[in-house]
Image (tube, rainbow, N blue to C red; front, side):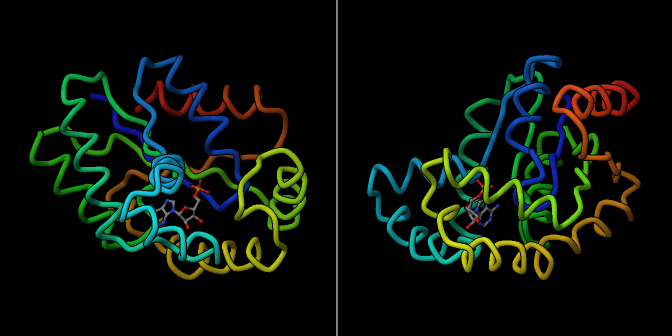
Amino acid sequence: MLNLVLFGPPGAGKGTQADFLIQKFNLIHISTGELLRSLIAAETPLGIIAKSYIDEGNLAPDYIVIEMINTIANEKRDANGFVFDGFPRTVEQAIALDSLLNENNTPVSGMLYLDVPNAELIQRLNNRSETSGRADDRSVAVIENRLKTYHEKTDPLRDYYNRQNKYHRIDGTGTVNEIAERLFTTVSAL
Ligand code: AMP
């Protein structure tokens, strides 16, 4: 199994690049952001709880996200592998993912960090706000809080994967095709 953690700040292009990776390597895309947005749209009890965090640019509680991942990974046990997009975002989530995958003897193959300068992220998120229809793309204050939350809670995970020798930095600037080619080269060598 090829299990990829696609990592980076909001606006780094994780969703776009996940689409390239799943096609190229025949993987299943798991985006916790998309899963949470569908819980919210369906107005489930967990969706209602998650919405109050997401609308402010804060992270949804770990227990909600970990439960979603466990469910979907168990449902798709016979997959060729997964692209985890936007997950893990905390150390607690990373530990939960390791134990889930280790139970199945299919550890994380590599973590791919899309590196994009902060000024470009803000520009991209502002552009996206015009088309995404996402509540959390609409306000500058919420975008700023998402970036701050990323730096405080999520960015430290680069060390977590580096210590496991699974960390790969990818230049996340240039055209989407150029970035995809860089990812393909790195993933093919895993
Ligand atoms: P994304 O679509 O990945 O940008 O996620 C949108 C929002 O959903 C984030 O700003 C968080 O509020 C929430 N979210 C997505 N993934 C996670 C996660 N792994 N842990 C906690 N919150 C998450």
